[in-house]
Image (cartoon, rainbow, N blue to C red):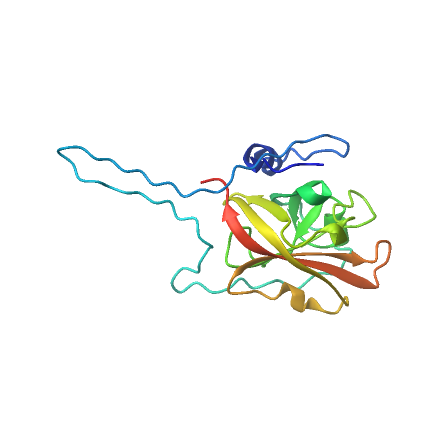
Length: 212
């Protein structure tokens, strides 16, 4: 099983387009988020302190929440656009994130719902994946437990989300992509495995940034 100890190097390779093939063993290492303070004192200078902000993301003045795009027909072939990468140590997931949530896009890996929040932003990051076909990254989504960590990376940085809850909805329950005033993450896939009757949904909350 992949164990958390610096997603940065592995994720950077994925973002650069070097997707990992199935069967390749990869070790993820993630350094804990820290807030550093430096004090400098001498007989001729006063003490100065520098703090690195490590709190949750916030909206800039005048900025509004992301606006999810309407889903195109499920068989639409979307342009291949890599937006980042995802790692879930609990269920051994390490996949590229592609823009789009149609079936041809999900065949490549994990899809990011266009218009939802990007990793590390205020709003709801919405990601979909297959359970039994192609790379089937979300095959074991039901094994995620509260407290499990999900690592996301994009051009903006590397971020950690912590699983809060898992539940089942109907395919028509598109409210799961609604945007929030906090930074959240929603993973979804068909349920049960091999059926499109329902959807399994995992919601996680922003925890920290790991690349600063």
